[in-house]
Image 1 (cartoon, rainbow, N blue to C red):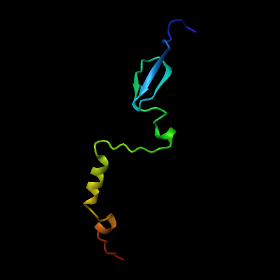
Image 2: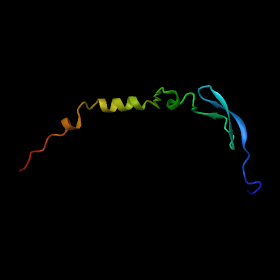
Image 3: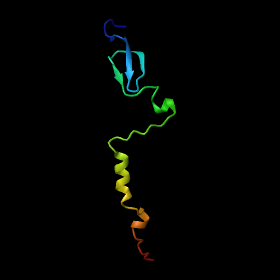
Image 4: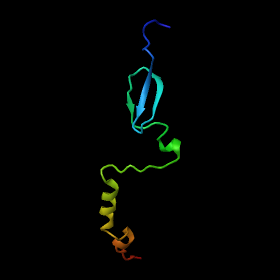
Length: 81
């Protein structure tokens, strides 16, 4: 193994957005994370829907105007047999 080519491996304390904090080791300096294992839906079993900038409401509003489905909206073409 070559000397002096590996980065330093530090122990640091990371703080999550949910308020949890834990120690980990890393070559980078990380202060804060957005989501951790205590608040991630995969690990907790709880589903959290995060609506970014009202996208769900915009979708419902956009498609609520046309109350028809595609089959109702398109008239059937006559069969030319």
